[in-house]
Image (cartoon, rainbow, N blue to C red; front, side, top):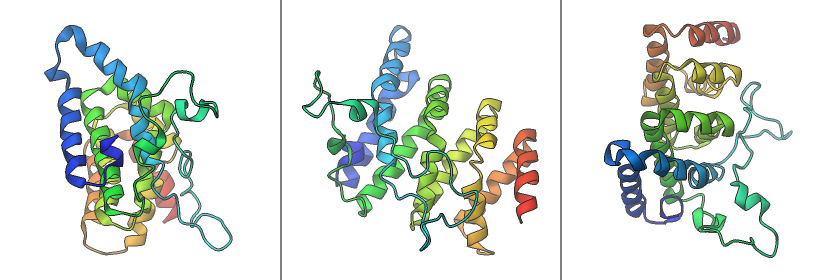
Length: 238
C-alpha cells in the first residue's frame, strides 16, 4: 500500500528496495522460495498492476477518437482492477481483504509528482520480477496484458516516466524469449513506442536514444520475429 499510495517519494523508494530484497530468490531458502513467490503472484502483484490503471489513457481528439490508428492497444484505457475489488459485494466482502483500492493509491492525487513516482517504482519492481522470476512473471504478464498497461506511461508528459515504459519493454525483449516476442508482435506493443519516436522528430534526447538502442539491440541480437515485424509494419507506415 505504501509503494502505490504514499505521498512521500522517499517512503515509496524505501518500500521498493524492501520488496526487492524480499522477492530476490537469492535471499530465500530453497524450500521456501517457490511458496513465497507463489503467494506474491497469487495475491499481491495484481495490486501493482492496478496502480498503473490510474495512469492517464491515450489522449483523445474532439470527436472522442484516439489520436492515431494503431495506438489503441488491448488493455490501454481499461482498469486493471484486482478480482477481489471487482467482485466484492456492496455490503463488503465475506472475508476481510488486506487492502482496498483506496489503500493502494485511491487517496493519492493522481496528478501529483508522488503518483508519477509510484508508477515508476511499480514498473521498476515489475522489471526486477521479469529478471528474477522469469516463469512466474511471464505467465502473469501474458494473461493480464501487463506490457500494454505499462505502455500507458507513454501518455504522461514527463520524459522520465515515458523512459520507464520504454526500458520495461527493453527488459522484456532482452530475454530473447519467443513467448514474449510473439506476444509483442500479436498485440502490436511496439506501436506506441514508434509513434512516440515519430512525434519526437529529430530531437537528440534520451527518449529517442532509448528507442534507437532498443531497435539496435533487436537488430544486433538478430531477433528475427521482431525484426520482420518492424520492417513489415513500421517501414510500410513511415
